[in-house]
Length: 98
View (cartoon, rainbow, N blue to C red):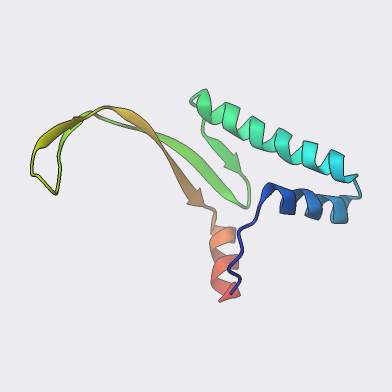
């Protein structure tokens, strides 16, 4: 198993190898994709990448929580949370990799 984190530079390098773009063009391409996904999520849209998965925004209601250390109640404000749901093909690929 690989203990490495895949970075933007790694993605740009892979695009350079497989597509043949220059290093600068590959890095620009990766940045463009990341910016588009980020902008869509910030605008409240869900993002689905076929064969990979979906980034889904959920609204969490305001609630009362408790500090586990002191037991004091605290109000937790409403917020949006981002969840990732892997596609079936990604799940299958991960299972086969084991």
